[in-house]
Image (tube, rainbow, N blue to C red; front, side, top):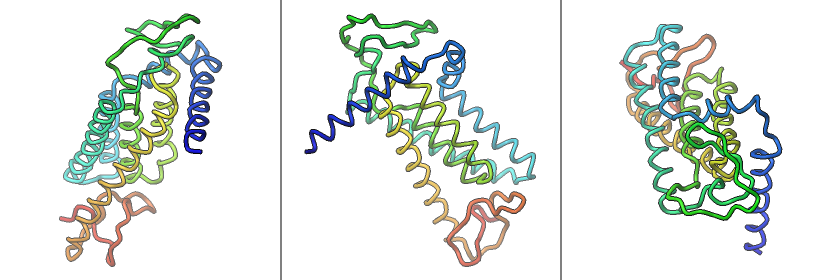
Length: 230
């Protein structure tokens, strides 16, 4: 029963990969997919710049910005380490090294495996996607700070994950597990920071982020103390 279910899920995973990587390809999307799948360092800069702009727009305290950046860095750093550890354990071959007719990017050049392609050995592992776990961890953390913008923020990891399949680097399941792991890591850190705030509930200060009509991160405390009180 379990083997049958796993085989069925594996078939769906492969079928969806072929759809995204081969059937739904369009030349006009190639530059966008390349940009979305660029270095996670680039997206880290984007995230930090976003927090800085939030500070300017809403007159946040410099210390709040620093602590938010620290939390964001912890989430993304933990996500990246988890991906490397799991990859070393699972050692799942990437589709570009395993399947025929796969379109993939190599050193800035688009390539396609021939129909008679046979699997090749590679040290690179597919499960789970580091891009997916990192981008989701960052998005979930920033969305907690700016709940009004969460629908737009969550589009970023979704697009990044899609690009990894489009580029032949990962199977859809690699991306889905990366998303789930990144979200869980962010929720754990946010919970720990909230617990730290509740231990300081006797002190009063404004919330770490206050947007018009929104209190920022809600805290399970009687007097809703600030996440980082003065």
